[in-house]
Length: 396
Ligand SMILES: Cc1ncc(COP(=O)(O)O)c(C=O)c1O
Image (cartoon, rainbow, N blue to C red; front, side):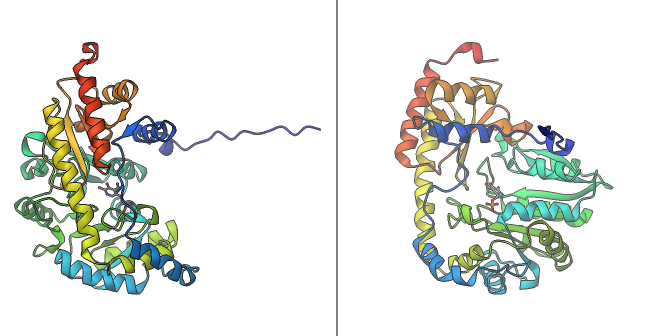
């Protein structure tokens, strides 16, 4: 008798409602077609610094077991010193949970602070994982519009208007920002801190790009007076140390919340990869010059890219941090997905449509300068040619 094959097709509604990121499609196409220049990547193009990779050989023998769920104690102790010295945040190891990248930390923190139908205010345009993460736990992401005219700075008056006394629990900020490259001013952070204190809200401070700033200094909102009970700081080894593949990040904040996060994190992943945690300890000891060299090169690329994009007709604000430009394409198209697809097809240059970062990102494209300088030269020459012959029928 031939057994009947049963094809299971049930997928939860929750999952089906998740957006299909165009970014995934672009990465797939770029991997398949070598003639495409990709300005898509959200990860450094530099190798992980050599001393960290060399440590791998030694550390691997010590990393075959699970670490403690909250993270290797030596790493948490090293992070206490790092947060104190670099971010002026004074916390103990019990206030830190090491996670599988900072993305896991952000998701788990949402899980531990938001019940269904409660609200989290998120920057828009903003990092594309915020809205789906909130949706997955049936919380409500409330978009805070960031405007090009303000350099994509948070407007505290607009933020105030979004607070619902009963439902709002969290304000999420991201500085230096993906995709806009803005670095929030200390004055703005003070106003946001005041709002959080007044309404007794948590602030999630996503500082993934904290070390990548150009001509300005990153300030951690967790360092401001009176914010100890309010702020959860999210940082990562992915960007600063070019360690995306190792998947190691962390969050730091009030002890009671960290205990809750540790419990949920334990059920989700058990612990961050042990080997990556040992490499993270090493990363915190390497010479600053490794990081400074990468930062300087990003700055050189940024200067070139912003100048060229403006020159060829794509209005682009000078980003003060991270490694992205966010260009206004509204003169050419109101539909950033259509624009990006057409650019890819005709010019073999991949960029990310602004609408991927939320509805207020429509009318923009993101280019990543985690891309070698000669590639930026080639890509902008191709975009220039494309815009000169721009198909006017695509304008609407
Ligand atoms: C703003 C921002 N936050 C968090 C992350 C997640 O980084 P990771 O999980 O590698 O620490 C990213 C990744 O691109 C990001 O751009």
